[in-house]
Amino acid sequence: MDPSIAEAVKSFSAMKVGLDTVWVMIAAFLVFFMNLGFAAVESGFARAKNCVNILSKNFIVFAASSLGFLFLGWGLMFGDGNGFMGAKGLFFVSGLDNSPATGDAYRGVYSAINWTGVPLWAKFFFQLVFCGTAATIVSGAVAERIKYKSFIVFTFCMAIFIYPVVGHWIWGGGWAAKMGMFDFAGSTVVHSVGGWAALAGILVLGPRLGKYGPNGTIKAIPGHNLSMATLGAFVLWFGWFGFNPGSTMGVGDGSAIAHVAVTTNMAAAAAIMSSTLLAWGLIGKPDLGMTLNGCLAGLVAITAPCAFVTVPASIVIGLIAGALVVLAVLFFDRIKIDDPVGALSVHLVNGIFGTLAVGLFAVDGITGTATGNGLFYGGGLKLLLAQLATVAATAVYVFVVALAIWAALKATVGIRVSREEEIQGLDIGEHGNEAYSGFQIFLTQ
Image (cartoon, rainbow, N blue to C red; front, side, top):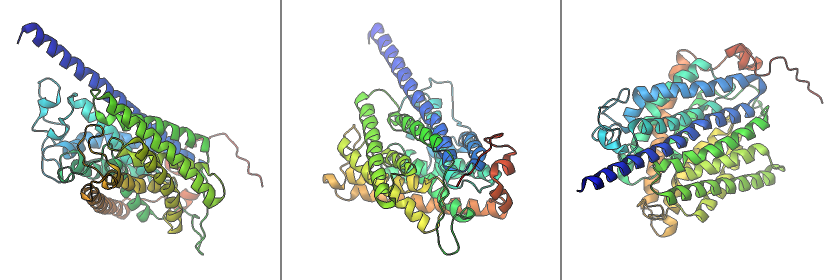
């Protein structure tokens, strides 16, 4: 090859890696920014006396996830190994060398992630913020009664033993990927995993004091700041444009990035409308909390299929997700599963639905990925069954392991604050300060 041509090819390759890296890192920063959204939504849906505790948990959860994922989680998720978990490069992202920082430099250690050529640390950071998101889901579900130290320990365990294993099955070249299961940005890997872990925690913890009466009555416990919750929902909606389009992990296919952004947005918009209208019909008012959770439900549901479905199908998925979240909130309350922020209804229920939606609505190769067609597009049951099998396996593994961890914590350090502390509020008992120190709240009849 002519030396000038070779140099031009080399320069072009370096520029492409640079552009891909910038895109991946910007997308990762957007997903990191979603921590603010979760903190705002969860604190807004909680009572004022627990606001500091919620905010502190949302800070500590990402710190614990970062350390746990670096220590072992990344290796278990992306290390070459067997169908169940990684077995190479396990600790502290090992296997590095002095070769150029491209995916090919680490083939044979983290082969499953070599489809994108950005530097290894860019891959690590992008996947790290997803791990942190899964752990954050648990925070809201167990709000207003969990011990701070127990939550920290559980977060470490989740970042090391729970999230990476399921991630390996689907994104790390494990058995689900080999079976032909598809989850573009994490309806199962992130949201269902967080949802199953949260459900286990809720069952071990029990409901908040006064939530359910002795005769079966359900007492509403309104959040103290819906302005903050609304701000948080907008931040999450914005951050999802890093979550889903960023999962292309490269700028080479601009049409795919744009397609994913549009399907993501339209699902959220449709879910807002259906959740608002259904809540209006069922409870007589257009409840803002249902509207906000409807938006998040649509985003969760489209996370798996966003790159595999048409724009009209994304609207249908969003409409269904918005209805599901309202029905799920009412259902969980009826069976006395106390979820202060609706995390199960948003992330678990719609994580499952979004994963199955791939098997129903997928169009083969719509953004270049050979998924095969879903059931509604003449593809038969093959894809749907692969999705369903992974949903079932995730449910069993995550719920059982999480339940064991929660039970072990309960038997050792304890997981629930005292009755007195719960009544007074976790801000004072756990942290020794208040979110609104010096403010006097007057109640009028």
